[in-house]
Amino acid sequence: MVLNDSSSLLAHLRTRRSGKPRDMAGPGPSPEQLDTMIEIAARTPDHGKLFPWRFVIVPETARAALGEKLVAILRSEKADCTARDEEAAIQFAAQAPALVVVLSAPVVPHKIPAWEQELSAGAACMNLLHAAHALGFAGGWLTGWAAYSDAVRDLFGEAPQKVAGFVFIGTPAAPLEERPRPSLSEIAHKWNPGYGPAA
Ligand SMILES: Cc1cc2nc3c(=O)[nH]c(=O)nc-3n(C[C@H](O)[C@H](O)[C@H](O)COP(=O)(O)O)c2cc1C
Image (cartoon, rainbow, N blue to C red; front, side, top):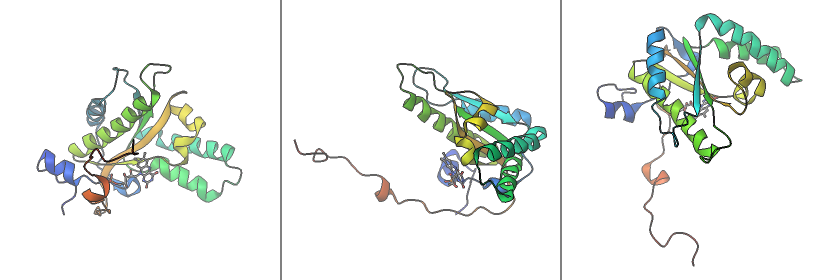
């Protein structure tokens, strides 16, 4: 199976495969291509036109500084932080040519439930991946401890925002491998009126 087959839109959708950020090399997207990706990502279903997502581009020149900040936060939050943990944080910030931090940015309180707004932020991450792939790159959506740290979130936004994902973008340096996918019968079925508790 050809992964990330760009021969048609349908082929692209049926064969999309994330890249592993740690295995991504150049070329990465240009600033214009990144803007295009974010424009596409923002074309995402959003109940109430609230735009409940933000995109923070971390430029290449700022990646080392981000790594240092992650290490400082990790030290303050993890009493048993090891040199290996610190090295992983530095590597995390440095991997892949481009990094876009996607924030869930719900408007609260609001009649549109925060849950719906958070779903929209997830969809925006997915759209960002599709845009990256459509432009000939591979994307990888990561979270990890940094996505759940308020101090890390504060580097990019403010409460009640949350990090929805660190989306890394670049060119796979190693061939991509398919991962297990569920069969249709495992994940989809037809509803019939016999479902649910008996009345
Ligand atoms: C919210 C979210 C967070 C994720 N975080 C990680 C992560 O921290 N590390 C990781 O290896 N994969 C993570 N993944 C999985 C990868 O992004 C990717 O979806 C997975 O490798 C499957 O690849 P595919 O996109 O080709 O299906 C995450 C996925 C989602 C949706």
